[in-house]
Length: 89
Image (cartoon, rainbow, N blue to C red):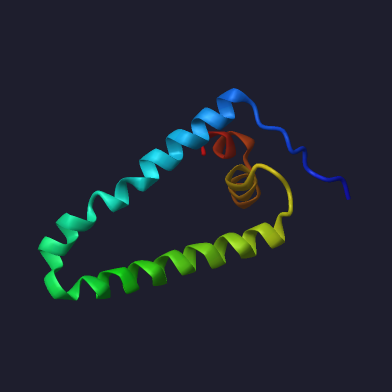
């Protein structure tokens, strides 16, 4: 089994940084969530953690089933048997 290439270029590093910045938006919305949910905010966090856990478990199962690079592309391509639909993802 060949190993994956561990190379990251400027474009990929920039896109990774943009993804981190956009993903950090959840911390901005905590104040609004606290105003809406009040003292029950912790229930929202628990529900969010459960949903995220199911998503993580799904990814781990798919990764074990298709151990190749390109993650979502491979999952969709194998599921729909279409390179084009995989490309759209």
